[in-house]
Length: 65
Image (tube, rainbow, N blue to C red; front, side, top):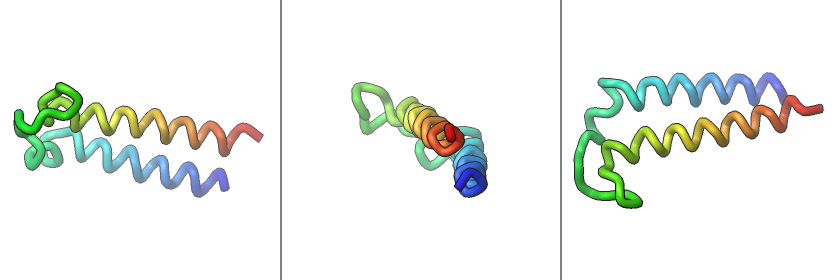
C-alpha cells in the first residue's frame, strides 16, 4: 500500500507542477468567475495547494504503521 500511495503522490505532484506553471495555467488564466471571492486565476493554484495537503495527509496515514 505504501508503494501505491507514493506512486499516486508522485503523479499528483507532477500534474500539479504542470497545472500551476505557464503551459497548464493558460486555459484558466481568467479574472472571472470569482471563486470564494478570489479571481479564478488565483483560486486555481489554491485548489492544487489544498489538494497537496490532502495528498500529504493520506501518504502520512499509509506510512504510519
